[in-house]
Amino acid sequence: MHSSLAETAKIKEYWVTLDGYRIRYLRSGSGAPLLLIHGLMGYSFSWRFNIEALAAHATVYAVDMPGMGFSDRPRGIDCSLGKSAERLLRFMDAVGIKSADVLGTSQGGAVAMMLAAGCASKDTERVRRLILVAPVNPWSEQGRFLTRIAGSRAGRVMLPGIARWLRPRHRYFLQRMYGDPVRIPPGTIEGYSEALMVPGTFEHVGGILSCWQADLRQLESALAQIREMPVLLICVSRDPAVYPHSATQLRQRLPNCELVILEGAGHLPYEEMPAEFNRVVAEFLMKSPASGPS
Image 1 (cartoon, one colour):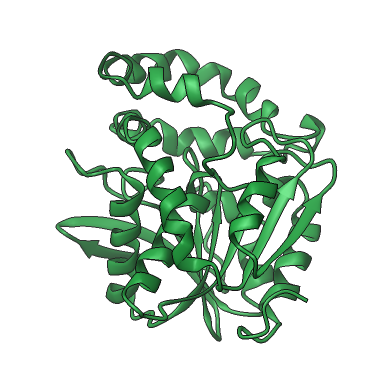
Image 2 (cartoon, one colour; image 1 turned 45 degrees about the vertical axis):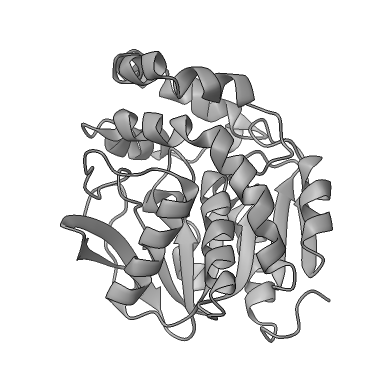
């Protein structure tokens, strides 16, 4: 296992081949499956403070999405939300997950919603419930200009060079994602940098950004498919990446939604406030899937 998350008796590293490339994932626990989907610049390392706690309530699968973490970086892969969701569904098939609760954060939250909507449109119950953590959504204007620039043809060409320039500045950018930078755990910078510097990472990020605007329009339309699905929406009060007020618009379209706000946390509450985060998620998981929010 990569040094960024040491293997324990409770957490095991696995690989599965999909469409000719390898996907890495971690698994722990027993019971109903819980699929964790990281954000744009993350990977399974993002859940290092959560997997064991959540494994007390579920069989946890923390996947490195293709193009990120230590999964392969296939050239020319379609990076849209819809295709990313389809690949996750095939991943579920490959590892034997018939149905799962799905937890997605940031851009991974948008992928989770598309996955659920795609399954619902086919009348399949592959996704039982959603847990969305500061999810990218059509009603947060933050970053729209930068995603247009970085996702342009010129921006995608420049991204790898920019990434090399950014490497010694990873701490600065990560600090901005925390509500209180003092809470950044030791080893966090090194853990993220290890995967970000794998060749092909920023080319893949550029591919995701090139689809960003069209993806948000598609996501807005897709939400009607999951109106009745039980959802836990976790927002934070100091989010610099997804504006907290956008949760109001998202919640209006997901009426079977429970909203929890973690005061003082930034964009990565599962790292910054793991005990509180784990408690909130565990309480939701322990409810009957049919009951929805209280």
